[in-house]
Length: 428
Image 1 (cartoon, one colour):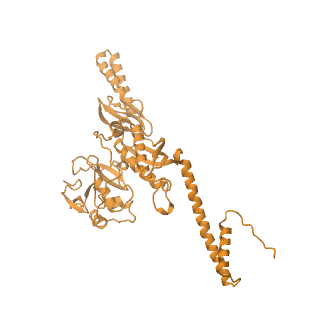
Image 2 (cartoon, rainbow, N blue to C red; image 1 turned 45 degrees about the vertical axis):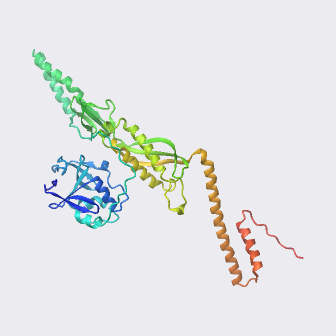
Image 3 (cartoon, rainbow, N blue to C red; image 1 turned 90 degrees about the vertical axis):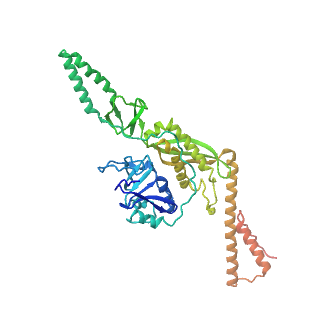
């Protein structure tokens, strides 16, 4: 392979159990998404290190570099404070020397500093084995490979002026008895009219010409495009706003088989309009079904509740961690539809009605036991303190039988649920 920056030859660099393409001339590295995730494992990073949907395409004056694998021009994208060259077709990124450390810096506990790509790999990844454990879920794959691209458009107001000028010229020709010359102008005017498109903020149109996808129109305003281009969604543009999905409550069995009711909300947005339209039939229904599936998969992995000292993750006690896992699971499921999951949170969590009473009694019994345990521990401490003080101050001398009676009386008084009634002897 040839380097997209200096046109030098790539060599294979061994990093742990992985081989990474490396250019000896300019020190650039070519890394695919899967290898980046493995590097994040070597760095013990818990965050999702790479979400391609978050990579924003930007325009720069620099000429696009060619992908080392397929030879197509790579996109300039902005991610983690670094401008990178990404090839969407090959799922790879070209890192210039020093950009690898900048890319991972936001996730690492300490700043790696400004170091070269190979120095970074040698320092943090070289001698660490890569985990071979498979991910919890697999990304859905389909046959369609459509990806979003921008359509060529012109200012609509300028085109209105041009068409009115054309209409005026045609009208003049007609008046001057050059009717046959003016007719093509009228025909062209009528044919050009469907090219006008109006978009509001956070809206987009997916356009096709005779069934072929030509691009997506974005940006609020008055646009003019190919007059033969038609919107796939006709009179309803695609909304790019953040939206909320609420599928209601579901009854699911937790890790130990207890039926519980769970409700979630998912905040999402359309990231790739072409994938949303062409890869799935209805992306809103697709999101709804995949959210239900992800919720069931996550809930079945954890118990509803766990003791505080057990160190075990539970649905009730670790809501933030559960929400993060839920978000990652849904994102993996809907990536094929070009959707980006902004957040996912549990809004309702309770035992199912058929076991709610029994589980409440169990919780109450556990609370009573814990309270009694604390009372007994406190009472024993107070008895020990009382006996020690009486003995140290020589207040009274007692044999073992008298101490046993005193301990018994004090424990009854301290542990009883009712207020003690003292008995006072009146004499013989």
